[in-house]
Amino acid sequence: MSSFSRFATSLAAALALATSATSVFAHDNDYLDTLKSPNGGQTRMAGAYHFELVMVKDSKDVKENQVTVYVTDHAGTKIPTAGATGTATILAGKVKTTATLVPDGDNRLKSTAKYASTVDVKAVLSIALAGKPAEQARFAPFVIAKDAHTEHKH
Image 1 (cartoon, rainbow, N blue to C red):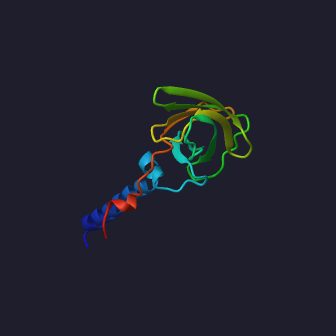
Image 2: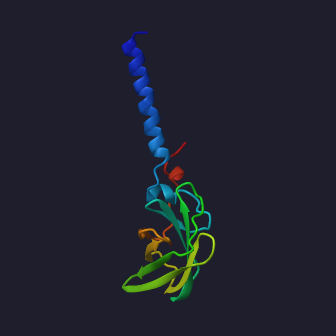
């Protein structure tokens, strides 16, 4: 095998590895929606963190319901929320509610807000961990995510 052939083979292998590594570590919303979140919520990237938003799933009427956010790094390691501040802005049609999130031990922030569990609900989280700038993420917590595996036939 010539040196050029060995170089071309090595280059092709390196490119294949780089491409597959990029797709493995991609954390866009579509990818995150295919994963089962640890607490049953919807997960989004927010800078160096993942925010998992958990809202009450069976509230048919608009009423005070719990809002919980879990914070982890991209590897799933819990990030302490002591000293964190944040808000959850919840939009449902023309109704907008803002809830102040407070640390609730471990890697949680909690609050309550008025909402019904409908597919038109959108939420925007803004969370500043202690000594860090605020990070934001957008959610559609009651939209049922498609499993990427169901899109093709075997």
